[in-house]
Length: 160
Ligand code: PNS
Image 1 (cartoon, rainbow, N blue to C red):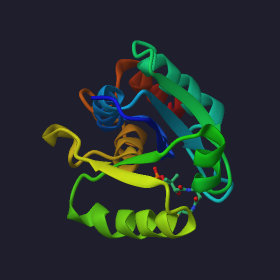
Image 2 (cartoon, helix red, strand yellow):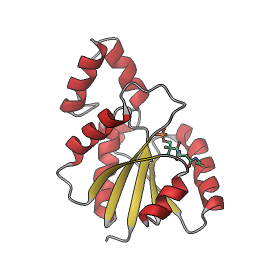
Image 3 (cartoon, rainbow, N blue to C red):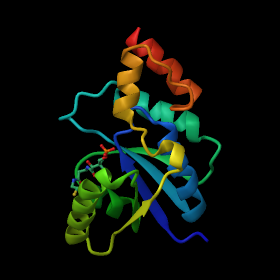
Image 4 (cartoon, helix red, strand yellow):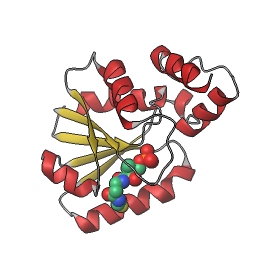
């Protein structure tokens, strides 16, 4: 059953198979799923925002109800601008819970009409993160099954 427009925000540096698993689940639930890349001036990313957006567009192009966008500033302001009523976030393990709870409650305080929906990624992705993927790539380790092939190619080129 589809209910409303949702935003799936994140850094996506780079998009992993865990993100894709969540996008696939979210796409089935919402009329429109906006995958929103944060333009964050504080973090030192591996991939630029345009590179991350390009990879995300490539790996989500099969889903008509998925859009990739960039946002800056507060997520609640972006959600208002996009007319979205739901923030989608993934929780992999208990370790994610504290940070996610804090963000969800703060977002609720700032904008009570915005709901955060948590989803569990498939089990094979419960220990997967962009940070670990970057580390494995930097040391030339195997990335099969962790990221889509196009992302693996970009990672190899980036660290070579
Ligand atoms: O993939 P990440 O880095 O865990 O995503 C974090 C993100 C982008 C969801 C979070 O940093 C965010 O929403 N930033 C926007 C600024 C904001 O609204 N901050 C207040 C949140 S309580």
